Length: 295
Image (cartoon, rainbow, N blue to C red; front, side, top):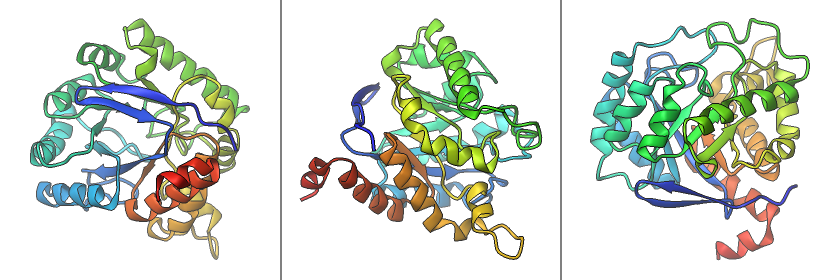
């Protein structure tokens, strides 16, 4: 276990403390082809209802995305992405109380989403798809999540994996941070994500989770997303078949606990109610003071 550093982000609506307890980020995929819940929330009203359900279940943040970046995906035009997310952003505006993060690789989408109420940008490409996202984050005064992805979604699980995954992730994140800083994004507004499942072998995902404290030494808040991912399905495989996404709940819980004990400030999940419980108990393990806060 590590002693988790405390940070404070500046959102348009006010400050957001990181490190006092683990924040749970609920995932809302407004896509037809996401690996876990593709097509379930394409209807705007259903998506709005699910957003409110996650807030009631204890989510601290909501991450909305209109483009699938699962292995093998080929990308989505900006106008299609906006057509998916805007009705949902408009539907929750003034109703949802928790901050919204926009999951996008496009500066155009990020700009419009912020105008529609989003307060954080989550770029899974780490600014390698569109560097102008950093300029948007700086100009609009919102935090920026930089994730490490080796390659592109279409081929990231087919290309050779890094020989040294920690070196690859650390160097990649440093490069993304450099781009952001040169665009004017303050160090205090950057969050990093090792990109579990994005261009890593199944074994490398576990290595990254074991070595999260090393990534924490970069000096930035950590976000980790393991929810329902393929390496968990492979771990739970029976008769040579990967466990389906809906059967990876407890495996997700195990990796969530490991992430928090390794220093994660934010965990990105699909199953909010269950993972809020996991985060609460893991926080008690991390620091007894957290248990007193819940009494």
